[in-house]
Length: 117
Image 1 (cartoon, rainbow, N blue to C red):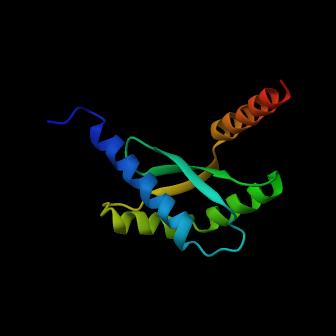
Image 2 (image 1 turned 180 degrees about the vertical axis):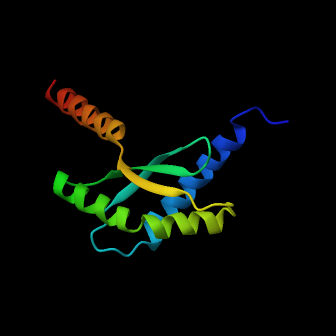
């Protein structure tokens, strides 16, 4: 028998991979800029998926990209259900990954400090 949560973690990984593929290759909305799926949060009942993304560019471009992703959320949800053979179509929500953005900002600041010294 698998440890509790093993199926949950495996499914979350599969959803992340499929969502990344959909965002990178299949969404044609012109509002969607350079977005990278950094992770997913899957509810315990598998009904809700929060897809965490980082978006290259300024706040305006990030907002526009998230709006484009949100309008494609229904398509993404149905594709995930079809590709992963889920019994129910999950509710998909796209959210900017603030942790990744902060880590990137710290990295840039550290690099700048190193270059100055």
